[in-house]
Image (cartoon, rainbow, N blue to C red; front, side):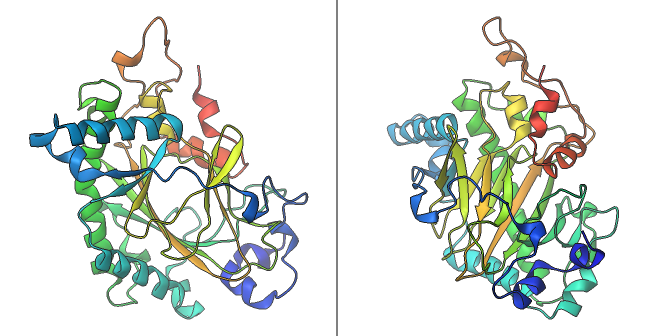
Length: 351
């Protein structure tokens, strides 16, 4: 692969290639279920978080019904659409707009925030670890967003002017959701509600990946993001309000994720699968491209304390369900190595 292709942003490549996509983005034999119209829609499982988070009403018939829906969504899909999360439609539009405005800046302005050679944070695209690696049709801005003293502000855009304020406010709202969400998931497994919270340790880490998917002349051969599962405990995704693209795999078949404009799409990550001793599944997902529209999304990744060793909750290890995963520390190092090779990092820590 040429140095030029490694460094050039996909957004710039898309502007110059009207018919042919560079070879390093091409899945030679296409990819499974490449025809968008043949991919079925996944269950439209919308969960009302206000019913799950209200302790004073937790035994009501409505709350119990909602917990049942959450149990079903987690066991069948490992993901769900979350509503009544405390953010207005107007505010979510502001977050989307800040993302769009950043990627619409001139290239020279965006390059001020280019990722360092040994850094995850910053503006860029795929890290190339193999000559045979098929590249994703996306540009990204990756930021460590919580706790604030971990933010690397040299990578935080100063334009658009509202970016820092809006994103910080958004992250604080997600932070207040995180522990109640873990408690609800623990209760779904009949665990003490603090089981997953305790496994995270003292300091939760949150990182944001702002994604931009340009129009693609060859959507049947090019993926926005290759199939993978997340190396997180939980991922909270704000989808594009109009353009579909996210797909989830279940039973070796791909399903389209519907757009629910005011919802956050929440999925289990590898670390929560480890904590649950394999009961909760970290779903494999991908992003497809299209030739008509560009698309944005914002994924916020939630991780345990990086210095804490994470493993299955003791109450979930039984004679019938022996320990499935090793206890791990710094799982992100395992994750990025295997992810770029298109392999499941989780397999590396199975017992």
